[in-house]
Structures are given as C-alpha cells and as structure tokens.
Length: 151
Image 1: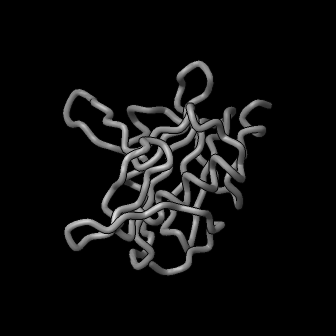
Image 2: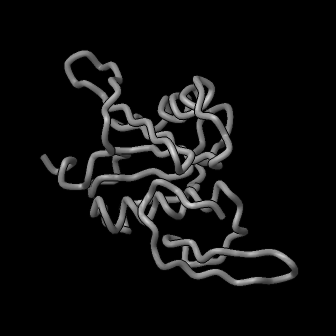
C-alpha cells in the first residue's frame, strides 16, 4: 500500500487464501485490505489517536436506513448523546475527489444531519463545517478535534 498524508500507525494484518486482511480498529475483526480500507483505517487512527475522539463515539460503515434506501457512510462520529457530529467519506488514493464525492456525503447527511463533513483519499482531505447562523456548510482547512466539539 502507498504512503498517505495521514500519520502512520502500528496495524495488524494477516494473509489468508491469497489475500491480505487488516484488523479494523473499531470492529476488532479482519477486513479485506483494499486501498479504500487502507485510507479508512488511517483516518480512524488519526481521529482516535491524534484528534482524541473516543473510540466508542466512532462508527465505521454503520448501516443507515432512510425511507428509500440503506447506505453505509465510511465513518460517523457521534457526541455523547448519540447525535452524529461528523461524517467522513474515504476513497482510494487513486480516486480524484470531485463534486460527485461531495454529493455523496451531502446525500448521507440529509438523514444524519452532522455538523462536519470530511472527504479524503488519504492524500488530499477536504472538510466543511456547518455555520449555525446561515445553516450553510463552509470549507475549513483542518479537521476539528474532539475538544473542538466540546466547546
């Protein structure tokens, strides 16, 4: 796997039936190591170990049902009351982040109503935060840490 612009970490892998698997930081089970999974595990590590989000408030690929379809955002971060605060959409490093990627996360957010949206391919990261007074998302040049959510 290629190096990302996210911090490296000590991860566990195993090889089985000709394929490599990586231990998921949250679900504690081995998942097929795809390029997207590589980005997702690095982002989880960054959120938990560098931005100090409690592991128990993070969810990976949790099924969300709305009236028409079920979908699985890559990462959703909740507050201590169970309200979604952040959605992270991860793409493989070779995928160019486009308006279509932003549309995907905005579609997820119609049901979830998070305050922060993050799109990453592990090399480039885009983040938007909801402005309370305008109810519009504005781009920000950082991913907020857990302490930012407490304020």
